[in-house]
Length: 123
Image 1 (cartoon, rainbow, N blue to C red):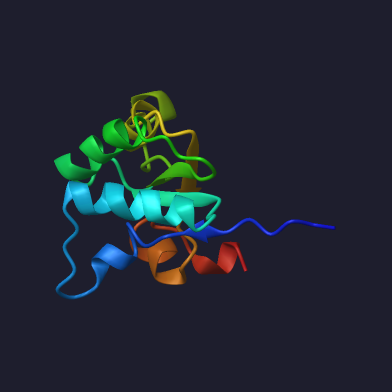
Image 2: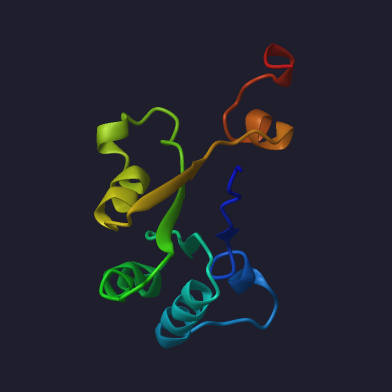
């Protein structure tokens, strides 16, 4: 029987709602509760977004989680920057999170406006 792994984004997506502001302590407590509930992966945020998220990864590594793995969220390297020189990728590695999620820009507006590519070439 196949197992479904559950990936929670509360600490990143959930913190983007109007009026939502998690303290470091809030994020650590939520992490522990999600682990208690049996979540497999807990997305802790983007380590380079702010000092609180950087500190979160340091503190989360000290938690005695029974089940969940903390995930650092980030993006592919920036255009024109070698992966070894990209501060975004470096921050993901330096977070020392056991799992890293990297997203690529695929929305046609991102392809045109950020990547400066024609959407006709990838459709």
